[in-house]
Amino acid sequence: QMAQVSTRLTKLLGIRHPVLLPGMSWISTPPLVAAVSNAGGLGILATGPLNPEETRASIREIRERTSKPFGIGATLMMPGAEDNAKVALEEKVPVINFSLGKGDWIVEQAHAYGGKVIATVATEKHARSAESIGADALLVTGHEAAAHGGDVTSLVLVPCIASRVRIPIVAAGGFADGRGLMAALSLGAEGVAMGSRFATTQESPVPQSVKRRIVSSSENDTLYSKNFDGMPARVLKTPKTQALLKKPMHPIVAAWKSFSAARDFGIPLWKVIPGLVTQWDRMYLMSMFGGATQSFIRASQGDLETGVQFIGQSQGLITDIPHVDELLQRIISEAAQVQAGNEGRFGAALQGGGRVVVGTGP
Image (tube, rainbow, N blue to C red; front, side, top):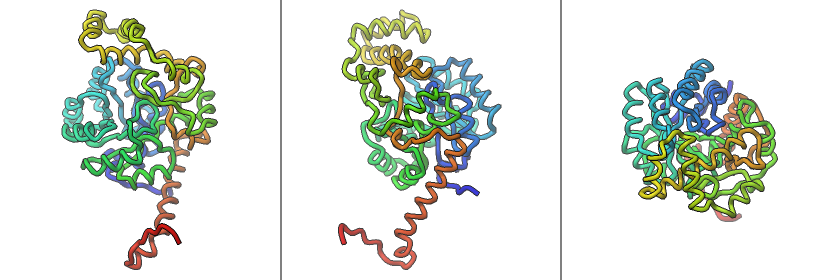
């Protein structure tokens, strides 16, 4: 029988293992979400590329595939995100994960039907804010993570935030196996999110050619810059992304792209033009993200020559493409082995009532 890791997070969410699939656009689709939940973790649906009707259909598809808890993600600053979150609340999704916006209304409405809310944060300020509005847990994203990780590495960020809030923390950024899970628990987290690792499984919709590229790449084969979509983000190193690293988007081009992005997102131009004057920083960010969307879509279709693929430094730990259930069993088994090894190192002294002395040499 597979070992079970019990934490405040597993009890809060009603899951067997403290391992989450974060909501990654074009990756965290219903089949992968359900596979993670069925295997004992928590799958989170990415709603960024979806409209409300597609979000509702995806939620219902997940429910056809699993009876286990699952969640949806909503990046609130993005167009359509609030509408998708409202659909999730109407559907009474067990877990709502929000980021980059004020989620107090989500907390209130989710709690009304017994749902739980996880806020994604990368700083202490945002962590305290999320706790103050009643978020049930935090997904703390370190610098190592795919896409939009924070400025501080998980090794420092996780224990810092864990020591300053009372609600459970999910560590994200750099975690891909049982060793990482046990490290996160030691740092004060109650679980981990493994985006890059789950993206490279059989159930993931990432094309096989991209999965093989990730498997063959090292922890050094990523780039981190705001040139890719307007926000500091980590992506797979390719000739395309190396070129983008050297040449950020010109402001005039960004302004033009904002009109194209507005059309793609269904935003009337009369709402865009005043924003270019009064909220230039926000509109520049939105235009950068909108302009980059096609690059992300091309990568999701297997084109790494003109596409951009989000990936974390944990790709250096990814050496195969297993099924989700096999992967989770391996992670928990590895974590148990690490725990046993640690008990062997400290057990004799602790059982004998002695002190553990940490030395610097023989």
